Length: 467
Ligand SMILES: Cc1cc2nc3c(=O)[nH]c(=O)nc-3n(C[C@H](O)[C@H](O)[C@H](O)COP(=O)(O)O)c2cc1C
View (cartoon, rainbow, N blue to C red):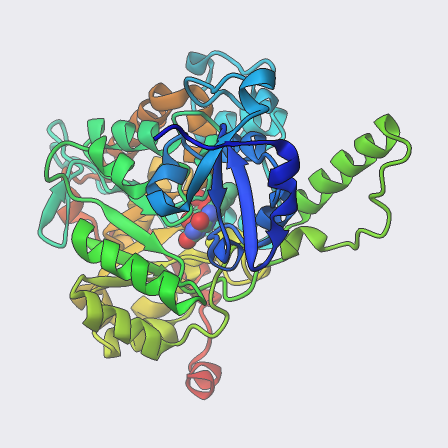
């Protein structure tokens, strides 16, 4: 049957909560009720209801994501005007903000250079915890051992019975298409080619199925879950995870409400100002400071340990809690039978001035060392050097994740991901050799001087009163 042709005028009639249409790349969808469960939050859906959302959609989603997520029965027809004014893009295009002069990749010799390149492209952000995460690695000194025959070396790590060539993973980050049109596809390929795997974010630009298809058959992968406040959406997600079988579900717990993101606010204000200058009649007045926060993702603010336990029981898939920021919560995760903890403060994007993650690892090691033996431990936040990775592993982590660096690496696509991992791997191997070890299984706290770090570990009195 020929598809129904819909005019822009007809489309614009369907803007009520009980009857909402939206056009994406020429197809008109009935998206009634979708605003409430859109993982990226309702605001953007409401803004484009009854209109053509192709442009904002294509800037962060793969072309196929809508077809994967919506039911065939939601397809209303084809937007008449669309093919007159536009052509369906063959593929996602590059974010124009990143076109401006990136340095050649081989000019980058460490992750500080990579961050400087991102700074130029204005995709960096700032915060106290973000800075402390990195700076606290500098509080730990190495205590190298010498004359240990270190020519042959390996950086393998074993997590949940899988062996990876390197202990380096991506920290899940939303909408990587902002950095490159190949987004998580390039990230996954780069990680796998380097002997690791991907942690697929809930808010990926490509669908989880598309990303898994980019992996070799049966290659392990992890999934980061934002728990939706919408029960039906959560159950649908749980069903699909049960079919896709990630090695573990990493439940992000450190962002029950959307935090204040000043870089986003400044960017929005700049855009609003430009709009006012180019369209003098445009009304952006009245936008409150903090408005960017309301465009937040759809995350359940009432997430609690019983929900995490329910996830564990209803999926039968190992659960890691992402966003552990103190020893008490590591203990809680252990008590409810989680297989892992993922120490993180969201890279300083959740509670600013939260303690740096390497200090949290030291706190757990100090109060509940058995947790590091009995659970798998991931850590992220400020990891930028091979020596940082070695320090985290000596303190008890099995896997180390990087968020922003992979976002920046993706400015160069898959090549950037491989290049960045190679830089880190070389630095890690050199650090191991200079410290006198040839395998990560030999990494231990004796290689470190942690006195300065441990001076900052929370005292027992206040710790026990806070549990
Ligand atoms: C742009 C950006 C997007 C992020 N999106 C997510 C996300 O969707 N889910 C999540 O659990 N964490 C997310 N995070 C947090 C990262 O997983 C990670 O905790 C943090 O980036 C690690 O710090 P680092 O950037 O210093 O390496 C995001 C971080 C950034 C910078």
